[in-house]
Image 1 (cartoon, rainbow, N blue to C red):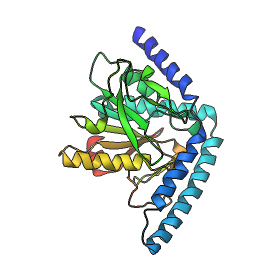
Image 2: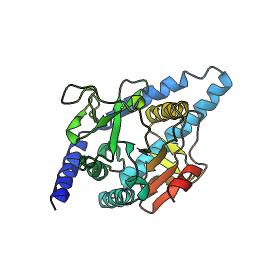
Image 3: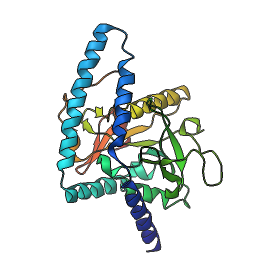
Image 4: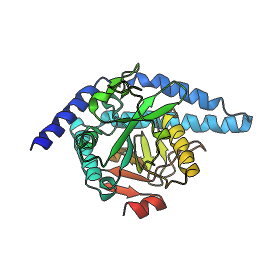
Length: 273
């Protein structure tokens, strides 16, 4: 009972603090998109990228309208169903090191407050280590830093909750890219997905850049690649072929929706079954 009450308090605190997040992150998306466009040196390639980015912008607009139109009670129900499915899954229970996003209600992301409260409320067991994102600049540079409590999160200049680089004791937080042990699981946000693993982000390139860098790190150290698992409302899962991709887009291994877990990659089929 005490543990349940404590978890409820942490969850309530997370949800209350998530409300300060706003859609001002759109400026980051536009800057990230502009930076990506400048990388195209071949004119033909540039035209192709222009067409893809235009298609992505239109798709983002459509998905945002769909999410905005969702009934709040339905969204809350799906939030609970998704988080409960993850917390009850053997692959989550057996994970030791995780990277997870801090959900933002203004962006209408699948809520992670209950999930994070579950991880942070059980530090005594020492069986899970959590890393969460910190945006470093407007050039798609993001880090994942270790936290052990909800008070480790502060609002950044964009009013998005993230960990400060220094903890309450004055020590530098552990950066997952400098950790000595590999991450088992990434829990990822996104605007839209399909069942082939394509992910449509918000246009800033932060997650794609970070995931690619971590894949390179894991390969260099001969670590087993982590599973990239995205949390998705039913309304965010689109037909295959709708989401355009570029070489810089990183696919996900699996989706978790209210309907259940959808393994996609061979690794997910093996590890999530």
